[in-house]
Image (cartoon, rainbow, N blue to C red; front, side):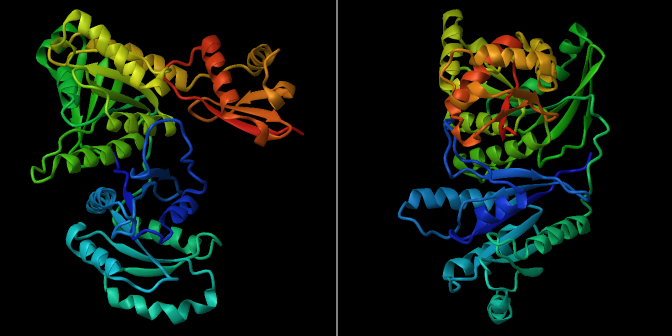
Length: 446
């Protein structure tokens, strides 16, 4: 199974990393959300091309530039982890500023921290005047770090096509290739979550002799698609499932914060290669910001979502109900996701995950007939203060996964998020769609 390569954008603050990211992705990745999270997180998106797909990661700025030293240290540590695990690095430098000591410090990190075979593309950003490019290029040769130097203006789309082609060429040279998804009928499930919540224990429980005696599970291991991870194919009732375990961090020299960040980074990558995310929580601990971030990424990426509270055997009966209620309270944006309390140690209720996976997979691919959808919509908006939605004449479901619904209105800008949230809640009451995010698209009515 081909590995999904990672391309990391590295550089000082204000060098145009996010703008570059959005241009390469081809759309603005919204940061407006009522789901908890911070701008310290990596932003990642899968880029699909005819030759090779890759995971593009936008990191926080390295080298300072703010008044919050703790924030800078955290961002720098996360950027280093992205750098250390990247297959190709885009090093951005602002052409409208003089080179700084921070730029050279990043070059030093690139020499020392990146994997030896990993190429570096020096991307000179904000080159809005093509006539001055030849004049400014010589100053960047002294870095001596880049395989290629590419001047771009992301705002004006100058040099972006050349950059895109160079990324593909470099990845192809590294023997990455387009993944052939010949196992479309096999759901891909990413086991994600913080370190030490029992992700590997859950996989091991499926693979145990006792479990094989109790139910028809056949297990085989294949090479993992992420560093220190193993993909496991499990057969249950004549259906095969591919589980991606994101555990296995072995670098003892890392601090707890680094380990958690690294786990988050790998969870994002595993999500991009999966259909369904199983977020594992420790039932004996409160839901953390890290848990919320990972859940948010799964939803924003349109993955099916199942939430497991592991280690339930460590709690008394009355404590179990409390732990489940508190987890749901802390994850109010995950109300569509099924919650399941389990114990990898005793295997309590673990087998129920397969029924949930089937349910979520069916929800993700469900098609609602246009006639039924329009009848539901008319009933949903009738007599409600829905603004321009009340006068909409048509709604249809797109071919996309997860379920995506297009509503035709006079002015899409007049549609409020709260109105779409009402529609989603009503839609789920009528059609179910358990375990899958729902997306809305508003289009001009002609």
